Length: 281
Ligand code: ADP
Image (cartoon, rainbow, N blue to C red):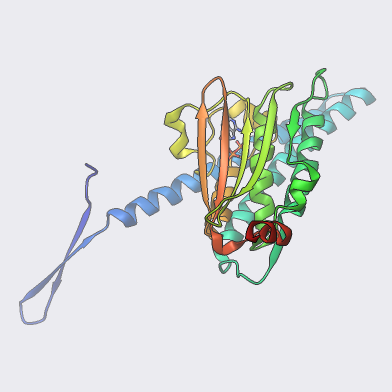
């Protein structure tokens, strides 16, 4: 059992009587500890690339370098700056998600558009990541006709796109070149819809699964950094998904691969008109 923390205060009245106030501050202290952890994590994530960047600046200032070397250093500096930029960008996205009102039901987004955009990004990312290797990933999305028949989702376009793209991009980033990534969209009989991404990557051990959507939680730090990860992607996905009344499900087998699925409630799903008509007849 977790210890409970109680704060006790004595308030004296003028007439000699005293009022005893006790308050359970367990949750308060936990929130405070989380806030401290978060600030420490942010500082670390910014300071590390900043230190490297400063090192390069000093080298450029003090060492006589050839033009080639100078360009190489500038390239590495630009990488570190980009890393800091991604962290700040993701932090802003997270804080915006937390601060804005829940997505309304009046904007309907075609699932086809979300899937197409995510497919383009995934193929681009795969090409970049496997540049020095012979093989790219095998990336399978629903066929164009199936995408067209995907129906609509009610919500905020940017949030839905970022949730789906983040999951697909993670599959590409953690799956070695040559592996495969399968994306699926299905509307179920009870009116809900399920988006899923399965990969043949390294998989995730069960003890990590519950913590995966925590800010800055990473199983493999070096792979995350190598592929431009900030450690905030799944925290963003979880927030965006929850705001839409949807749920994130992660299943994984070490050495085989992982499946990340998002199930949207029927209230936010509008099946494709022709599909609905076909079902009604
Ligand atoms: P990151 O920027 O580090 O990828 P995320 O929040 O997106 O941050 O993911 C958190 C961690 O979950 C990653 O660092 C990685 O260890 C693990 N992870 C996410 N997606 C996958 C995947 N498809 N296969 C294996 N591990 C994954």
